[in-house]
Image (cartoon, rainbow, N blue to C red; front, top):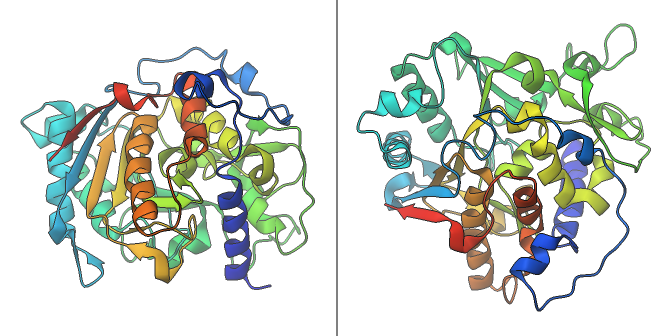
Amino acid sequence: MDRRKFFRITSATGAGIAAGAFSGKAFAAVFPTITPQQPQKPATNIGDILKFPRTPSSMPGRYPGKVVKVYNLDSVVNDTPMESVAYNMLEKSMLQLTGEENLTEAWRQFVSPDEVIGLKVNPIGEALLSTSHAVVQSVIKQMEEAGIPRKNIVIWDRRGEQLEEAGFTPENYPDIRILSTEYKENGSYYGTDGKLLSEHQIDPEWYYMADCEQEYDAYTLPYMVNQGKYSYFSKICTQVVDKIINIPIMKNAGASVTLCLKNLGFGAITNTGRLHRELWHDTCAQVCAFPPIRDKVVLNIADGLRGCYDGGPGANPQFLCEYHTLLVGTDAVAVDRIGHEIIIGRRIAEGRQQEDSPKGITQLLMAQEYGLGVADRDKIDLIET
């Protein structure tokens, strides 16, 4: 099995369970006429994590329940996102979100020159469908204009190989660090001591415990880093960066979506293969409740210039589309809720599903229970420009 096939299979597995049942009280509150099944789920350490005190910057951040949507038909030309248009869309978003008249002041609400800022991108579709360079370069330019030096900006994701193939390289981003949890040296994931190089990138003090295990073969293990019941957090988010700007792509996962929560939940930890079948929704929500994520994510910029409506969270050419949209907010849950409307609406229009399934927002309802944001559509303040 080649690497691309491996990722297509694991992505399909995640999509298949993305519409799985959820028995939380939030589900019953939003959909009182539906009685969900109550399968026995593996226990996790979320109860212990929720005891950690919150900070003033904890999710959902400065503007809970507020989402800015900017649409521009000129944002993609000949299948290529336009950086100049993306810059203007982002500028509008930041000013609308913050209420500032000056773009520098808008950015300074979230970041400062003495902090290390991590841009969490999503390169899983590699060159075919990744967080666009038009949006990432726009974010970097506006932060530079706000006084953030390039040496304090980090572009990061879980897999270094995907970052490189998507074009997130030192050549394209001079003076900016490109970091990953899983990486190679001299063409190998293993060091001279026979251990995975990635083991140096994980933080043993921060882990998501889930009472389920999966044994990985020699091919798969480098992409999981470790086996067992623990999923360790990357040092990138626990030790390297002070703040995180989350830049996911507008994609589906079956009848659900892979936006802000998924980009963080599965992108920040190891040993995720075991979590797809029974804990996909739980992982998306619960990992975001950990302090290294909850207390550091200050802004979410959902890149919907290009995206997909089926075949996600990977990339299938026949289902790629142009949403011509940016969604911006500090509230990752609210941004995901609006993104869900857009993506599922496209799926219905394209005949990929008949109607919106309430199970598709399970992870959002869970995150709302944990105090991470607003999933109730009636309580979201959507500003469209």
